[in-house]
Amino acid sequence: MAGKADKKQAAANTAALRRLYTYVVPAVILSALRQLVFGDASVARYVLWHVPLAGALYTLERSGRPHYDGGRLARVGVALDASSGLTGALFDVVYTSVACDAVAAALGTAAQWWLLFAWPVYWAYGGWRMLRPART
Image (cartoon, rainbow, N blue to C red; front, side, top):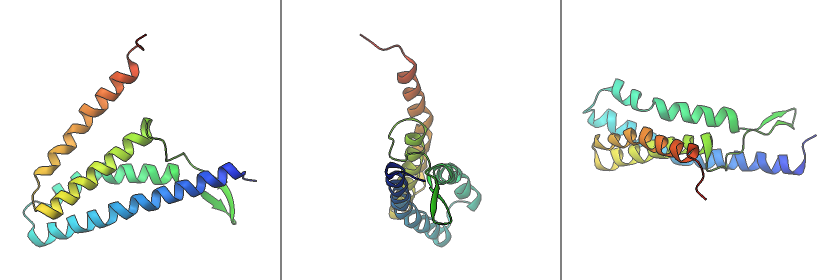
């Protein structure tokens, strides 16, 4: 039997995933339409640039989506409202990809994808901050 907190977390996770797809789907569709119409870059490169987005969305969906068994809450899922750790990093990947898609659709350029190379630097900085000893 799921408690009140579990049901609240399940509702919050469902709402977070719904909001996420509200941003992701239009941006990817507009970017794909731009790619099909103006097609200045290869489709393989377009798909390759979307692999991190697909991986992050898949991970967030599988770990955060609540599961119901016969109308009863069977598994709540990982809290998607956390802004740090792996969940925060996955949301960073999604939002950066969506921003790149929006810029590509609006400006018609592929230069914004250089932003994707900022992830490893950002994650290295976050790891360094997490692993360094606390200053007193």
